[in-house]
Image 1: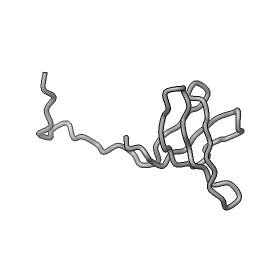
Image 2: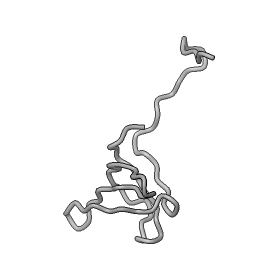
Image 3: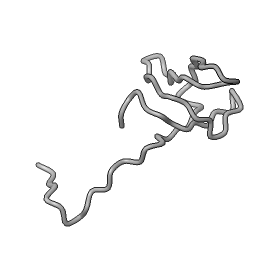
Image 4: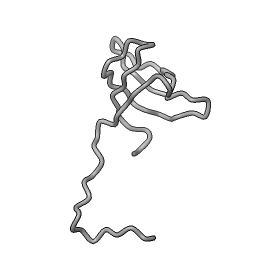
Length: 73
């Protein structure tokens, strides 16, 4: 997961249903700091972590089960 990164988010407080945004940070007060394009302009938005679902637009790389990747224990 890279921050900043492009995400889609869902938050009923701002009526967002799959809204595309750039996740800038997750602050210690419990908010996602997002940059959202609305009507052609970029706006900063803070939405609560507890009431927001988001996923990164770029999927995580697949790790092959037969690769040489090992977990050190």
